[in-house]
Every structure is written in C-alpha cells, then in structure tokens.
Length: 467
Image (cartoon, rainbow, N blue to C red; front, side):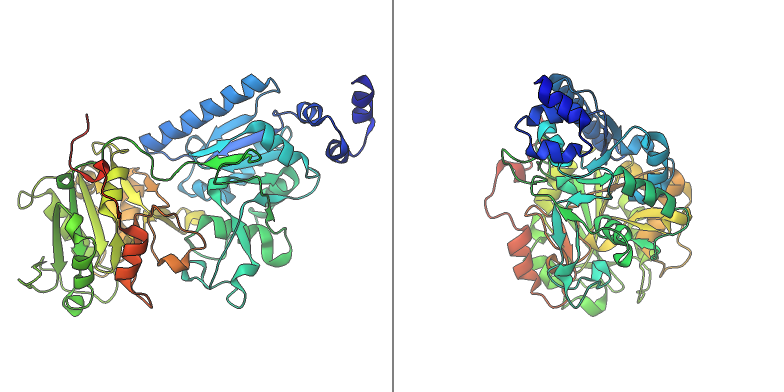
C-alpha cells in the first residue's frame, strides 16, 4: 500500500497510473469529491425547488457515507441573478470566478437524475483534467430538424449533443475558456429553443472547440456500471387532478374547422372535462365561440387575452387550471392531469416548453404556444389584474405572456414533456410525452395513438380526488 502510494504521488501522469492500477479505490480517494462541482438544474417553482433540494440532500448523504470529502452541490434556481442564467452559458463566468481555483470538474444534472458517486469518480478519472473535455450521453438528430434550424442537414447524425437527463460534464480548462469567451462572443440567435443543442454548438465553436465525448456510464436506464440513472419527467405526485379542474381552450379559425377540429375530436377531446373552441365565426356544429376578435394570420394575442378574461368570468365553470392550445396541438390530457398534481394552483404557475428571447440582452422566457400553455388560476388573475396588454391583436401571444410574467416576477416553468414540434423533429422523445404540435407531413391521428394515447386505463385516469 505504501509502495503504491509513493508511486502515486511521484507520478506526473496521475490518471494513467489509476487506469493501470489494481487499486481503483485508492485512486478514487486521492482524486476526491472535493474537486467536483455538481449543478442541479432546478427551477424557481416551489415543486421543482423542493425536488432539487431533495436531490442535493441525497448527494451529500451519499458523499458522507463514502467519506471522500464533499462535492460542492449547487441549485441552479438559487444562483439565478438574471432571467438568462437558466441558459447555463451566461452563468459560466460566475462559476469560474467562484470555483475555478478549487474545482476540476463541473457536472450538470436534472432534478430527477440520480448519481452514483463512486462510479462518477471512476468515469471522470479516465480523462486528463488539464485538457478540455465536454462529456455526456450522445444524442443526435435523425433528420434535419426545424427546432435546430436545420443544422447539419446534409448529415444530421454527424453532430452530437448531451442528454440532460443523463448529466453532462465540463473540465475546468474548458469552463474557464468559455467563461472568458462569453464576455466577447454571444450566441448567434436571439432565440433559445433547445438548450442542449445550442450549448453543444457554442462549445464546438464551428470546429474550434471540442465535440461531445460520449460516456457510456452516463445513463438514463439502470446498470451496475452507470454513474447516472434517470427516473422520469412525469413524477407520481398522487392521484391526478380531476377533469373539471382543467379548463381547455382551443384556438381555431373558420379556415381550419373542417381540417383540424375533426382531428381534435377524433383524438383527445373525449378526455376533456370542459373544453371550448374559440374561432372568428360561430359554428354551432362544433360548437365554436366568437370572442369578437378578428382572425389574424400570425400571432393570436388578442384572442388569447380574451380567453384569459373569459376563464376568470362567471360565464364558465371555475377551474384551477387553464390549458390553451392550438387546433393542431396533440395532447394527452390524462398525463397532463397527472403532472398538474405536482403543482399548487394557488401559486402563480406558467408551465410548458420554455423558450427564451434575447436573453443575453435582458430579454425574457416564455412558454411556447404550440406545445400548450398551462396557467394556474393564480397566474391568470395576477396577469389580468396587472394591466399587461397586447400591443396588437396579431402579436405573438406566447411571447407577450412571457414578457408580462417576467415583468411580474412569475417564473416560466419548463417541462420537457411538452413539444412545439412533431416527434420526428426530436432526436429522442420520451414515451410519456404530454404534447406535440403541427400536422405537417404526418398523420396526426396515428401520431396521437402511438405517442400520446394511454391504451391501458388506470386509476390515474379517473376523477377520484386526492386523499
């Protein structure tokens, strides 16, 4: 033991020694957990903040049992100084300044990512920490995707980006260089659409930076060799909320009454407790409601704000939650009702797929409309009473809502279960998706049945109230 210890400290190639050594636990101990910073990508919503806090406690308890020092464990929502910081890239200078002298690795995980610390140390020890490393579970596009601006369209699989559920890591030399780079080189697009892809593009820097290195031990399934595993983006928080607590508003127009509305009726309408179609004309055969707002070719801000006011009025049954969707949105209402059990409707909640606009220039986040916008009654009441308004009827409703909520200090809560595009536009889609959007070049009924329809009724789809 003493002999190997002396060799270890004398060696200038620490990682090479540990790769060849028959004493892996010695190497793990000497590399230590104190060199590691773990960032849990938590959110400000109370449910997500609580889940992130629980994950932090579990990691520190595991570290205490190992007795190899404590990693630094950070909750992202507690670090946020600006709305932009959930993008991670703008946060790097702060991380570098605070932990750059003591850390060797920064490891980013989701709230539901489970880490096995001994396995993680083994993985990180394979890589020379003096070099630039970007590690993760490899994802890639199967075909050119609109959400990635059709990047690498000639060979979509040639570019890889990390699966956030499995965790991803940056070595300290790479993080420090990026921290300097961000001061002088901003993202090219005003929009943040898919964080993991845009992060990988920024790091790759058109071939001047490192590509993602695939790590098989960064997992979303379970194996003895895995350093990480993943549970679910659809946690079990108890019985789903009842149908009557979700008010469903479908935006349509006369042009699509015969084309899109029949798809809604053939797929997910039956799962709604209360649903209304809002159009520019009244059509008793559907039926539709004309809110007195003319149809617009782009943006539907005027119509959406009219829906918000109607939701709060005495003209409709009172419900805890408002779901606003397009007429070409496909959605699983039973899964949505399961998800909503995790949230407090008395809290101002704006839930869906989060996008960002001009975040590096003090912009705002918003819930993208096509995937479905879910608002708690508290959020709608606060927004309507604030006096925030559309600057025109054809303004983009989702972006205006995001701007309003940002000014009110209401966080945009992200769920990867909501999708602004079609299943084929994503590299890897969870089986328990809540929504997809658009009928372009697909059979929407087939897509619904394959991705969203629950074929086996369960107690979770009943209206039984929570205990």
